[in-house]
Length: 122
Image (tube, rainbow, N blue to C red; front, top):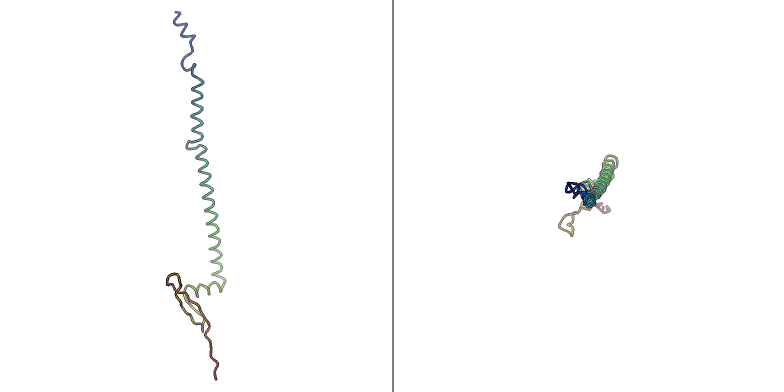
């Protein structure tokens, strides 16, 4: 009977090491909060990705506004239409001459419309 009473009085292994178990559990939870899938590091990466996507959205919005302005200019501004006709299509006004000269970069030609000179009649 003394044996039984002695074992009841002795603390169990868990009770003897309870502080260590709680400290280990707390440390593991802390690691999970920092490095886990929803931890601080993951939140930091997510915030960086959100900022990057927002910057891309802002850039695309600016490009979209520029394109809308270009469309508006093409619909309403005759000078913009004339510039495209001259630059891309090589068109000229009546009486103008187009001289094509190779570029220094790689053999592409550039066109420069000029007015013909008229010689005075005698």
